[in-house]
Length: 113
Image (cartoon, rainbow, N blue to C red; front, side, top):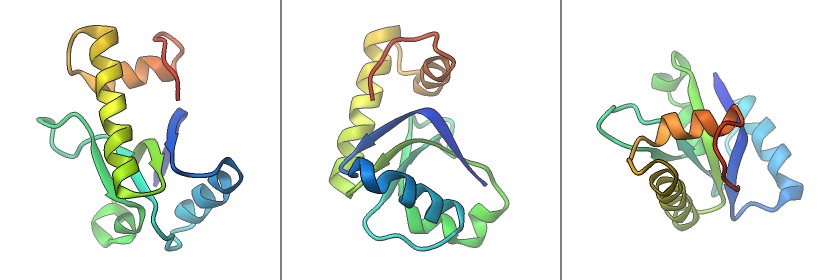
C-alpha cells in the first residue's frame, strides 16, 4: 500500500496533475516519468528514490511504501532528495532524515515543500 505523507515534497510535477498521478499510483496503474522519494529499505541509507512503476512489482505488493516526495524526473528526484537531506541536517545537525520528516508531518519541525 502507498502511504502519502501530508507534508509531501514535490518537484517537477504540475500541481494540476499531482492528484491524478497520486490516484493512478494508488490504483497500481503505470505512470510516465514519475519518481517517488521513499523511506529506505536499508537502514544505512537516508532516503531512496524509485521510479513509480517499480512499486508495481510483486516485491512491493506485500509492503507499505511511505512516500515523502514526488518528482517529475530522475534529476528532479535527485535534487529533491538532496534538498530533503540538507533540510534535515540544517534543522537537526544529523542525517536522521526519516525522524525529521515524521516530525515535520506532525507539525513539530519547520520546513517547506
